[in-house]
Image: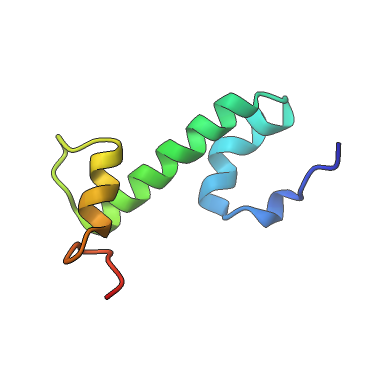
Length: 70
């Protein structure tokens, strides 16, 4: 299997997932990436701390949401 270079990932993501990815723990790496993306969206959109998971994304990207692209 051909693996992408570490440099292909954004540093913020690579720092969190690269070791799991290289060990072949793809489920762990994917989970870590999803959590990192959620944290980045939360940081950028500023939802309340009690909002988690898909609700973070829905609030951030809905029409009129802070990260929506009009």
